[in-house]
Length: 361
Ligand code: GDP
Ligand code: MN
Image (cartoon, rainbow, N blue to C red; front, side, top):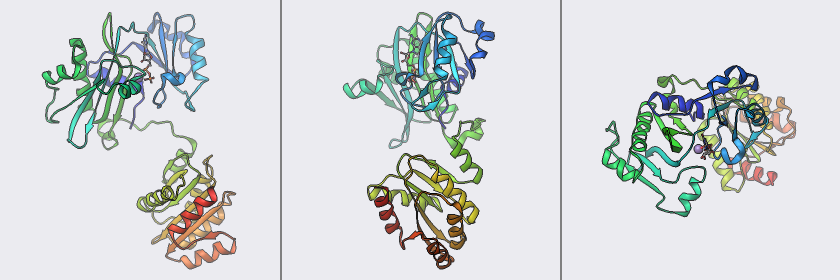
């Protein structure tokens, strides 16, 4: 799970990394009573899970006179189409230099790898593309609890000693928090020392319980609905809705759509033994995805009964065309029910997907 900046900063601070003083708010009204916690110039930062947030208008500068007005403005802005629900207001750092540091796992080497650049900040991607040697990297044994000092020096070049110390602290975060990624961009020097001006942390989902991290993401209405029914659901941005049973069948339906040149608008696995009601909810849910033009239902009847599936599709009453492939238990009865209502059915997965790509255009 990707944590938001303010959550990541709390965990960074626990390992001794310095982060700017700040307050987290959900409403502008919370600012006046907390005025004394932030003095001087401030940075106002939308807590949204998007890359390139600053460039997308999610990081604004203000001073004490304009802080409320600027914060209100940010609450009213969508950042890459995501509503801003929380804002972090921080004392503005007097930045002298911006570095970039990122720690992840090199899966081929089966070792942690640290990337470092002397020119960090919002243009790091462009910098990395333009100048091949702008980013240095080192990897080392995962059994070490600290980054070996000689590797730190090799990695960070002439950077001040406090930068090297902070990189090592970030490695402690990476290990102790079961991270898949720990990143600071920019890691900055100021007249008052080194600070993490930004923070990114992705914690391995398998360790969330051990880490005591609650899954507190703001789900969309559709994701909440899917969770209620126990569907595995991921919304995508294509035009072909997908409903399958079993992750394997559903994934291969997505692959086949891609193969025939289409784009899926979701992944939805109804799970085993779905009855008509579950299927009805699934079809309605998928029909609500804004980009969907046609829905493919690809279900294999085992414990799931195809006549139940058919009843569910019919009961959904959605206006988006639904193309069906059902096979297995009670398939004939299911097909009879759907045929009566004029649904398009095809005998193989290949055929339904081809047809759907055609319909989607
Ligand atoms: P991102 O776009 O989501 O990566 O947001 P960041 O938190 O990295 O902020 C974007 C940019 O805003 C940084 O690269 C800095 O140049 C600038 N910035 C952020 N915090 C401060 C600050 O405290 N002082 C100053 N002067 N600039 C800041
Ligand atoms: Mn950043």
